[in-house]
Length: 315
Length: 271
Image (cartoon, rainbow over all chains, first blue to last red; front, side, top):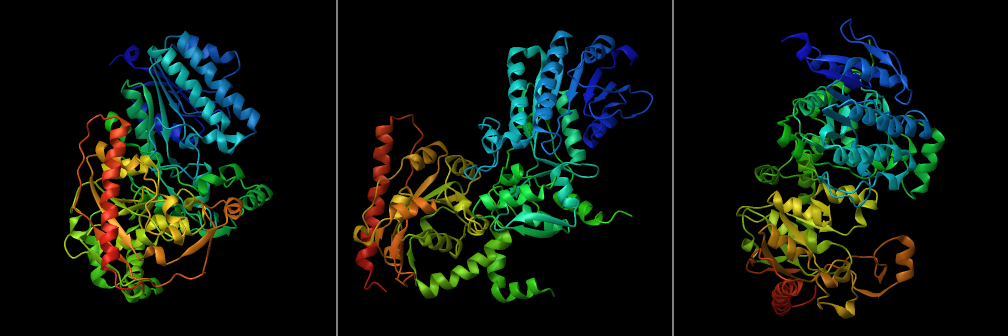
């Protein structure tokens, strides 16, 4: 295959472990360009890497210079990072800029990484939530607004510009080596807070499986919104036990009490606005994605938890 | 041997453990299903319920073989007695039957998931938030689901209203038709006498965020319970107006009413 025929893909959020896994899977047969707003990451001589804010004008120069075929947008700031305002600017306005440029420069494939947090942890959630379910995340906390807005925005572009072929992925908890999100930090710690009397069902996907899922999604032009989750479930407190974490119960009633305690503690891995996710289950149904893209996760929960158990004290 | 396994060997008889392992459930690698059912927890749950079922309420169940051995089933019963004891006993009757036992799921009141400890405990033994999506997905998984179409209208009624069926919701009939689920009506007699309530303090219930606050003795009385399972009923999935769906619901309600009368006539004394 000649150099020109290789697809050229823009990957965002490359400072994260997930994006690097995706890059490793694609670099042999695609030309990649990497961006991150946080830091410049060296990914080898064959991959140009930039540290750019999407809202800056120079971002457009990348599109002019490289003539991308596709975009894999993994650069979402997690709700435990930065301030609400900066997150909104980066996640919502930044994504809008990215999608506008993708439209302007005739990009034919866009994969956007969202999160299961958009469904919101509500006491009345049924299990196995479908993609059509309402996004109740905003009702819980203003800190989840940007996650839901990012989705809404991507959805508008999905229907307005069908030629962009946008696929939105809503994964469950992504965990595994190198993952720095709040749930991974909790599983890796010696002691983790729990809300007394609540142990909601959770789903975990290994970072390698998630990277496989993103590559599968990119390679099949199928528009739409898809949950990504293995067909395996575990209660939060049981997961902590299997990871060798000591559980620190926080009083859970009346509801104002844990909120006050968590606000005072101000833990990055257990912020008060994610409190409901440790109280009520958000179990998503990943069968549509598995069917459509032929996806089968290969790392079982036991293997994931063994990793956390054995890496409590890094040597 | 760890403490947990010693406790388990004392509490859970080996034959029960084996029986539960034989009942196939769509569970994940750690013994959980999406609704929080846990294969290990149910063993403890059933061992404890056995004593309650056999010794305390001395349940007499007849017709439990009417529940098909496989496929989606809706077990529809009258609700009574403030606490969901009736659901527990129906569940045990089916899980402990000699021929082809099943572990049914029960749809529970929406406020349970908000109660610490109790919510998770109920989930682990198979109870599920009473949401139509949950029920639909479980029927699609070929589960047997216990539904009390009266909801809190039934469980919260006062002693003076005992054995009077309240309004049945139509939701269960729509689901039964859509998923071609067999309906097995059940008449429960005896649970009304377990916690007889003389009044309901509505302002207190509102303040506590619970469906009702009964004025009753703080004990569960050992009333003798009769469970009568009726013959299975089938309904086609034709598109019919709501009025006719209500007629079908009334048909099921009529069956349950007959089964209650049967139970009441069989009953020699209250306790």
